[in-house]
Length: 409
Image (cartoon, rainbow, N blue to C red; front, top):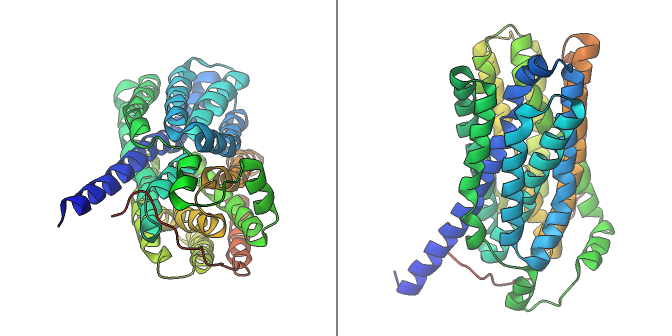
């Protein structure tokens, strides 16, 4: 192995470690918030519907920040955006236990924490990895970054559950806030702008507005947005309400933490597998398969006895498809339009994801309030999954012109 090859490989893995590590801390913190739902309800007395509204607004705001954070990262650099995002996420999480009203929870969870997580989220992190890595390795790279978020959920959920039991939910939430700041060094590694990508690939410069207008006229891009709406509906419900589903089944509270951990653990497997598969099969077919698996898994779960083992198996299967939609979706965006404005364009796709997440998080709580169970929500979930599987089939995958990256493995 030559010295130049060694340097390229070290750079490749350093970029992925920075992006995946940041995603692990931000996603792990966000996806563990469902463990605090009942404690917040007991502390504030606001009711499950009101607290679910704060979480749902957070899902929506996380999505709304993505295209704007992406545009800022494309223009001013990833590093500055990541520092601001991590600081806001830590602050919002830290002050949440002091909020006693719905508006206060919307501000801390929905605006500060979720907005900060959006600024340090997948639109910025995926685009940074794609920008700095050669095209041949981008599918694997996005899979690894996505697996980082899954690992964060797997590692953080049981830690958060243990902290709640041992130290109380207030201290547990504030410890999570401080953990987020460990990602600050990654901002230096991932610094860079879209202009550098354009220069490196010798593409014609294109502004964010022109890129968005082109994307909104692209049928495949619009279908991706529709499918990602459904994905958000699914994953937000699971992140916020799966512990409640477990409790409704009459199981101890700890099973809720373990089920979230299983989601994260098996999403690591799903993310890595889909990252490998992206370079070998059509991405639209992979997306259709993922949504079909979700539909079947929910149907089976509805008819199975609700034991601890059943819940963990269900969480594992859903984990395989949980965020494995991200690498092929990001890959198709890059394939359609190139990586230069990917933070902006993928951010818009993530916005539709989070609009779906808003309804998944909010309606999950409302359906339980109205009916005393989650069954009707699961029925809608199945129909949406089937629709998402079908809607990806008409997408046409145009070939992307060869272009060199700035980091190669």
